[in-house]
Length: 239
Image (cartoon, rainbow, N blue to C red; front, side, top):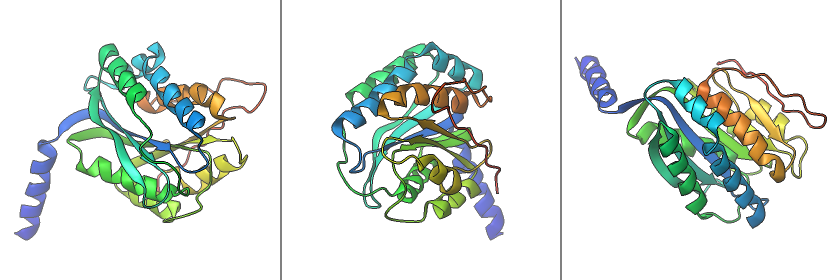
């Protein structure tokens, strides 16, 4: 009897949430290693991406329901915040409006260690409590350092994957050339998960555009050959 009530209750909650093709959390690094100029480059790259016709096309190819997007900023295990609340992006107008919101978003967190596990836990919680129910759920984590504080990112990853979440990474090789390996081993997970890399913050806009096209559309894209520091993509099967 109790089990039936519980299942009916869960179904009612799910029915009360708006269906979307994708729930996407953009998790932006604001730790001590990120200077004001580097933070601005991240935000500019994200805004430019949502103004790109290629991203508009990816949103259309994802389905007819639109995508629900939110942005969090994160640093150490005590510092995460919802920088842009959830909203539907389903066409060119709403994508460009979201880009405008990114442009207007300040840096809420300054300083602190690099707690990727805390960022993943916080982002996963946002997926649980929002008003949407996505066919796919993705956490997009970008950062320039390996975990040096807080909860174990591999454990946070495994917990999120168990809830049906895919975690993708964008490793910024600004100061540490092995960040992408850390993301591959400890951060990404879930169906079709992958790591991409940016050589530095100046390369972030190029990398985040390619990353968003891939994860929004849900369709694999071919790597574009580059003479130096090619995009690194690596699939990780679901546990």
